[in-house]
Image 1 (cartoon, helix red, strand yellow):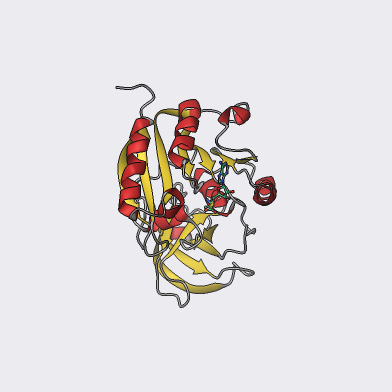
Image 2 (image 1 turned 90 degrees about the vertical axis):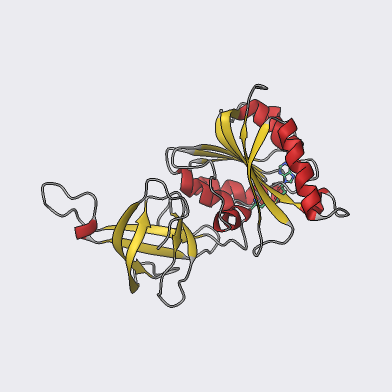
Length: 279
Ligand SMILES: C[S@@+](CC[C@H](N)C(=O)[O-])C[C@H]1O[C@@H](n2cnc3c(N)ncnc32)[C@H](O)[C@@H]1O
């Protein structure tokens, strides 16, 4: 089993249990499971479970949008909680499968992004939250000590987002236009990361407006760029290059860029670091 984000991982033997309605049903054994990661890839030989990206479920027993759940039992002899030679009791952890065909962030992670600037305890401002499916995985990643400020201007999607946030108290739903961040400044603190997926031609400007108000010095920016939302007449690579230049002008120093193939066509994920004052 491989990790996606390789820092501070623990390895333990485990049993993988089935998903969906009966997460307790054991369907197979795996030799190693990487636990306590930011996001994980479950990659093993159990039939029907292959190469999955998962996040640790903040609300075990509940799915958010009908996604599959996988329950992993850490066997007693490998449990890190053993004290004075006495084995700690086996523990059960539930993960939710994160589909890269439904989430640009998941596609970027599986595509090999090196840094997502979100980890347990992080404060994340998520622009373009839609109904909150990807937001719910970000909420898993930042965990109970982190916060996701999720901005969405469509009232229809906003209803689902608000509903999801009633179960995940680390999500603050904000049904507002991300072009007007002053409208929600009373709700949002300084953040470690801005993730943007608004699919708008002025996305770079929107990200800049929010970064100047809410992003910490050295904070991370992760942006999904859909080429034909910006300019449908130019080649995608040219559109991406122009967007990266706009980010530089907003004092966001690009660090990484990758396409989201094979999950999305003509999309790029760009990550960068914010420099609050011009150095
Ligand atoms: C591509 S979808 C986001 C999908 C979502 N990130 C996910 O993975 O499930 C873009 C969303 O951004 C929202 N949006 C577009 N412009 C916006 C704006 N100016 N302020 C807030 N939300 C906006 C749209 O209503 C739409 O729900």
